[in-house]
Length: 398
Image 1 (cartoon, helix red, strand yellow):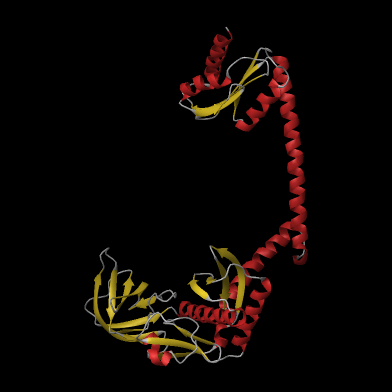
Image 2 (cartoon, rainbow, N blue to C red):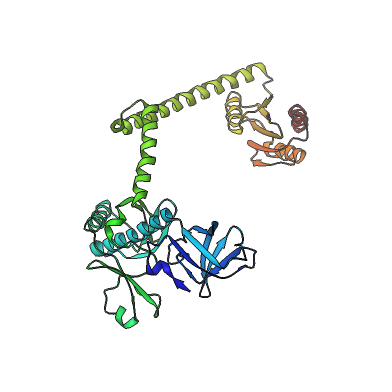
């Protein structure tokens, strides 16, 4: 099959003949052509998209030496001629990103000796993995500056088919993965690399490179960046977010960090005040429960309270009397929870009581003789579970 994308990466339409069409093992329809300008997925570059005779091409794969164009439906079997149209915006974006990756990887290696061991070209950003454990901001900035200077110089990008012997004469950035049909992509006096992808004919067409971030991935550093038109897309997205933040925080762009810090600090102060208020209310509630209840056993059923609040209430209540037992039940739409506690001088076994209650509601929980808790299914009302708990507690005291 003739690969037109190697002859002219700028070809966005072509005429050819249909060799055959069929479906794969899972029923996906594909066509094989006499020649094609559609680039198949490979070498880290995603496949082209477009149409064949107006029918959408959703995937392109090279399988056993043939290029399969996967379609949303079959081509008209009565027609042997095929017109192909490449989604040019997608193709040129991928060309910009792929060439930009070559340039940035070469910049890191030339300046710092950092080798690129893998790369991924995504829909919005792309990444390279550097064979290092840490990356400093000055080194990242220096590599970005060099990469953009290479772009501004508008150096040629050459694609050349060579033999293994010829390839050995070039200062290749990484070892070749093939020994035949070797294709080199060359930026003279800067980068020499084996690659089967599509690239523009000059570095100036890459437009620019912007590093967005980097992070440690196992023992390597993953650098995230964008090239060409994706820089404008990223800038526009960040500009929209910045405008909304300026409106929300009522602050100009340069004051956003200060305004955000102030808002966060105010929120933390409010959280502390709210927590203090909650603690005071719980202390008051515990005192009211103790005053209104039977000192020997204080109990109550709640609805929709958190287990943490019940725990605090139980501890605050038992702290007011060394002899009291506290049994608190919480009821939700489909669950029952409980907390039981005793004062220091009480001999009631809270762990044993919890075990009895858990059996009644098919629940899970635990604790010790002084304090226990648990929860389970709502097989009965909260009042019924409390009455059951009070009978057990009464029997143990008896």
